[in-house]
Image (cartoon, rainbow, N blue to C red; front, side):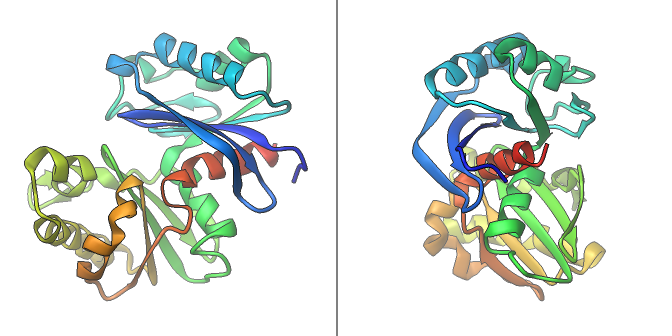
Length: 247
């Protein structure tokens, strides 16, 4: 781990965030910059925005990038909520060429999961832990005795004829004007589907919607324990910083 704060980005379908993270503690230093994701989220426009944010957040050393895609060897391979041109894009090399610094790229939900399992709500937890990020879609990160199975993408699991994230993402709640009770019922259906397949011991629920945990958290039901993410909506940038520090 490094002493100096590390710059990290979290790219979502709706917003891009940038922040400096003290990786030993997971503390975010100063303000988290938040910008609307460029329309269509094409590679060049997103990279231009990341370079601009890097210039606004002075830091040295490696950079972390949490990204809403399957990521293998720095290349992005899926594009559910972003431009299809990301499929097969060498995101790591692309950002490194923009900012002239080493970059660690990983799936955004995996980044959030790493933050929670290393320093947050899942710290020290054995067994099977599933981290969910409820936002524009549903991100998932799966851990067995603290070890990550990367790129699970279970937000696309079919639940009664529709993808899980088309039933129970935070965006679905907003777009359909669902009450907290109605939305929690949809989330419970997705949790039940995940439990039938994977039998996790713990669900950690994250994403910006957890700022309203008091409205829906007590309504969630499952045989597994359910807790809110400790780092809430900052988990992605914290996990990305941890990945960068581990380079």
